[in-house]
Length: 595
Image (cartoon, rainbow, N blue to C red; front, top):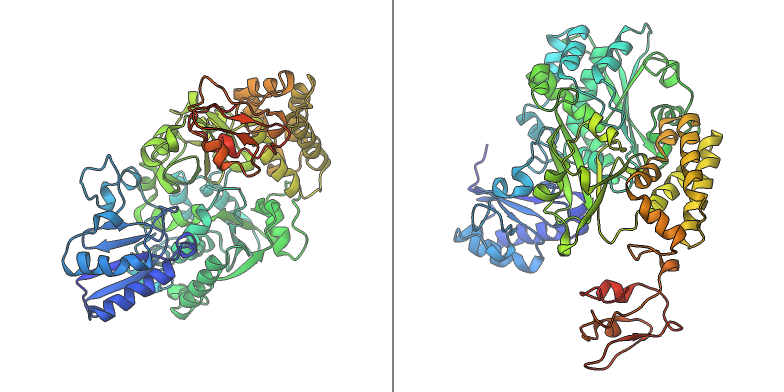
């Protein structure tokens, strides 16, 4: 194997590609060729390095120096100084005030230092389109062990010992689910991967599929061996074209290497995979709706029992796990269930991947041990709230989850603790909100999503979410009534008790959690006709506070309709007849002089 004196790992994930990583990579290759260094320095196209909002990202080895936001024009200087002269170019490097070194390496940056990468272990360090690189990281060793050394009972036993719970939201014990399916008597069984990631702000599964597709294939192979299935399907939404392309390539490579198909590892067992593309319906994230969709019907949930482990896809015993759950399986089989169970809490083992987004400095993928406090994720890893604003809440679990306020920042991220606070773990979306967020408007946003995505099969979800959305719209428009809050609570309970599937049953959670912690904001909207966060335009009258205004005139300069009169050394005045309530003045006033 050829040896290089330096390796340049450039992010090839969707986020970095959107920021121009492909042309930056080409510029790197061209510059190294021009300097006659292409035989000494290797440029590797990996996936996202998990710092998702700062691309294009580049990591240089040896040294592990992280460059961010690179442009084509930066490449000649970077090559000359760092690659030729050995001096990292500080102005292009990631800068972290709390890092141990003046020029931090990746493992010294708090965003990375506080994480524990199990599911994301290969992310950003291997080329996801080359099976040999996965194999070099012990890839398919767990599958070989499962197919040649272990019985079905032993595989299920290790997963049970690990205490792995479903990472798709419900947290059902994976080993127990596999045990039920393995004991079901049938000539045909199926293994399904739920890659239909539909929560707003969630991109965990997409990133794992793009970065490490073979880990999912290997996890499904082991599941097939455990329950006696010969066929698997990966249900992935069509909006993930890069993930689908890499999955198809990975499946072809695995077949070529004899890892999929007939008589795997000479064990006499067969297993193969296909991809089914979903059309982006949120309800198809629910397991029975997903199976109905694969069967060629409209994706709608069906009553349980019978449960999928007994009658699932085409009424055959079926195991369905999400991407993150399956990505954990190879390591559990390779290292043992006890190894996995050594991390986490008593009832929530292992690590959890979160998509950290919203009002936080470091947007990206985060993997931490179960039990890590929310505060550590948002402030130590996420870097806190930008622009010196105050933390207000964090939404966990997407439309099916709830808002956690500041008083619960030290809550550990495990299934029971999160539920006790009125939210759910969900698949791992974590949306941070600052002081400028209106919690009533936030609840309306999620209810609008739930109502739009309701399949309409059951009346509580179809009609109940519509009525709740109408009430919320009335409140934010200044037409709220005293009876609205108890009516929202009553409708929430009806939907929770009567909806057919888990998505409908958890749909009211954003409303219930905001009512639990931010009832005063609902009351302000209804009784005072005022939005405390100044976000609901219908309730806002724009006034300049003369005691706070610094007479800088920035609001007048930024107003798109010239509705603000201002002269030097004079307080600005807003013409309400001209004002279109676009919020530009509030957004640009640094002193909060406009209310």
